[in-house]
Picture (cartoon, helix red, strand yellow):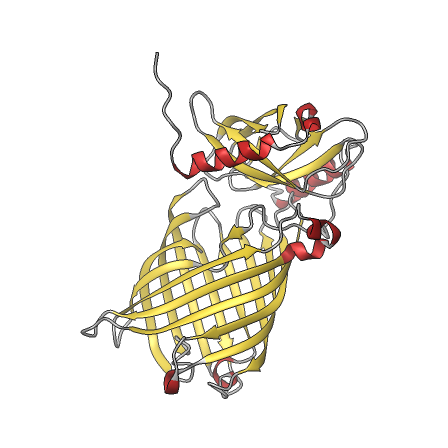
Length: 396
């Protein structure tokens, strides 16, 4: 008889966390059942399930831990379901993001309820001529059924986990005069849990985030390999995300405060404090996989004493653009234009080398092009020749 091996790695930690949560779940969860409008899900896409409880069930949790059980002795993959819309009778709709790598017939279970088990078939969608119209027809059929209450585009949804990625993570090498490496680290953290007393009494507080982004330019040609400049950007903001899961389109709004500094003093000190507002609109094309993203961001300078004329080169906002597929080629752009009629253009082209089950994080081949003013905060009023760098990114 084979001795069981101890679980190791982040997957085991996530499973242990789910089991710990399940141990404190209310007893009534044991009677829950799982159902779905359709037994098929698409890898990398949003899917929907229905949790059925006892008549008059109240206090449905906003989030539910769940497990995807692969056949045989395959691993159990941790995921999380988020409530969508108001409950109807003894039913509550939930949605989640299906991992891109999991395909075939698998079981979805709730650690909180032994009876909650559902078989699903994960397979890529077969293209149909109607494309988007077919998706809309499916969504309409689900909304018209009498087993669930339809959600509206005004439903507010926040990320399933408090810690997540904010802006792209990458390192790219190349450029000229001198040759250099440019890398960026970025994360965000939701400050209030949805199950806290404050969140229940003031739901808008669930959208309060702290974020931090660091972008550095590393001189690889000079003798001591110095960092030419580093930009530190902590921010505090509210984010609201209105989505329609069956169609995949989304609109996110954010507004808050951001500080940017290069951490130096004296003549090389650079810093700004701004209020900002940002929108992130994503529209899926008829194939259901390719989407176009538009992300305008406007700024109001609170303090720019270290660089009083920065608006001449950076302006009062920027425009982000994105087109591609999450599982294939993606092109993004950041465009800035100052009041002096100059600005900058940054283009990032990436293609997946591998993907991961967890958090949608992968490894991507990455090419970055930069031209114009302000490649670093120190050089906000200096123009550089076009810079092309090649490397990898973990989040794009």
